[in-house]
Length: 404
Ligand SMILES: *Cc1c(COP(=O)(O)O)cnc(C)c1O
Image: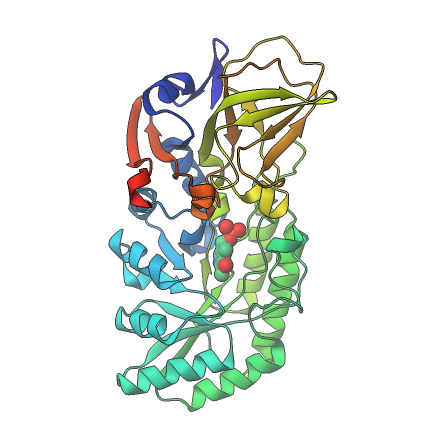
């Protein structure tokens, strides 16, 4: 994405043109950025060729999943819906892992029927349920157990998942008990230990601690694991102040780990694959001067992009047409929804804006559209995939008749 003649462009098309044609708000994704992200991710860990399972919850557009599949990735799913979507995108069941703390019997049965690579279980009760269903079906089911390694991911509190107080995974003692249970079962094939300590992680040290915790427990239990699933969570740079995750150091820590344990590594990245490929384009409906600040009232709202309202996430916000006039007032970018949390960002020293101008909200490819809703009965935006000069509609704008 860059400015050409003061107009913001994605690959070879400018956003003004896209907006004229498709209306606003719009989610746009860059095909080449997606390809670059996947290639980079692979390269970072090429010394041990991990299985990379894209975390479908970060973006559930089937056309994007199809592209991701073409690059050879598998899928990490957290519900029957996501599992069905991954299968529909033709991802091989042998590359699908199923995570989540509350898989229902129905979901487990379906996953067992589809013979996916792994069901990553998160409690003894879940494993007993898998065992019951597998016995009924006279099958042996490959599973993983998710360990809660009690490591602080040093990320936003709401997206931290690997600490003692979090609902995810099981603690060391339970883990050991579960391994014993699995060994006694004829219907469970325990193949994997999984961890996932959180999202938007920018410091490699929590990962190193996590690996140490995994290493400790592997020494304690007498069982050979084929896979260690290290989850996802790799952070991206939402603001220029962010520092990047040091992949070299993370890779080195994993290589160290692999020296001690002969296992295959699985990753479940979502954000780091798709996050910075997406941009939300929105039009200013009104500008309201409230004295100290101006409210920039956009036609996109928290139902389209929930992250700022949900956990105070910051998204870089840019004008689609650049000018040199700087506004003296503070701008607060808000949506039309009847909630005070329906705001995106407050900025000082932004350029002078006018009603009907277009705004680009950056890095919304992950947990953008997938967290969107019809709140206030607003239709969901159109999604476009840009490849060079080509624009492909990968999801049509929702019509009112679809929900009224
Ligand atoms: C959400 C989630 C992921 C993906 O996390 P990112 O931060 O998007 O990489 C991976 N694994 C599990 C189990 C998850 O819940």
